[in-house]
Length: 338
Image (tube, rainbow, N blue to C red; front, top):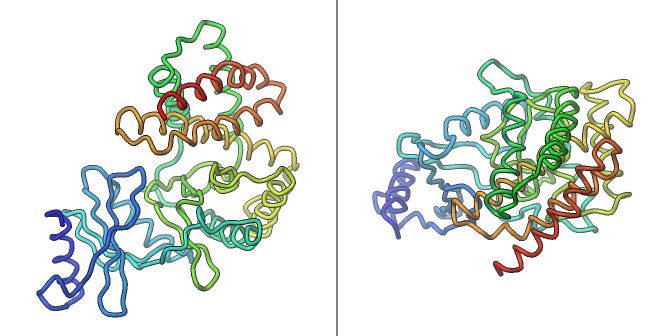
């Protein structure tokens, strides 16, 4: 056991007022994703908790605690922070179990699970926002899109854009971001995908990794949930799930009297901004952080982009560039790295 893991175990025992002997509280490692946080299931008799090592100079610990408290006050099913020491980067959380949406979703249960997940989106979006919560700016959204150029096109594919290609991308960004900001701006989880959701025993969806929450476009979380590379649905299934969210949003007062074509466009453009960012982030993980396990998601992510872009006349050149030039290069590069 590493030194910081021993320290977490001793700290957790102290917080739980157990014996000074750390062996009385057992600890086993849980999965680790793209962040530098480490998670452990900690067992004390019949009780279980999740211990977290999250170094404060790398992670948003204060934001995690803040949003946990805010969301809990507004009925969102996030884990309670039972104990914390932000200087050490230690937290002890409520344990939501092991049933992750990423692995539990199937055609047998997807309607039920997505219904629970969209219920949580509505609660998040109706949560009050104060001045301390960051709002998505045009500059931030554009900077995120351009991760695609910096890390995928330039660093991963070593692709040099010509003047015409640069113009195609620049015009596409403007079109995407216009719709990104014309839709209602609400509190967003920011990464509301199946790997961050848990199936709880009471049928609710447990929500994880919410420390990046911010005020942004209302369709950012729905598109993250429904256009997820781990679960790609048929068009009629996707439309059914889209309608499910829209109906709940109307009932809750988030939208009214908006033409369906506008709602679909908002959904699609929020998806394009997110997916372009993801392409860049996944390549950055591979190149800078030496974490390559999600390179397999590149092809599915760009396929989302191509299908969406080619369905809009003003984005046909962009969709064609991605399909004709970028996709084949990605497929070839990923194959070479296997």
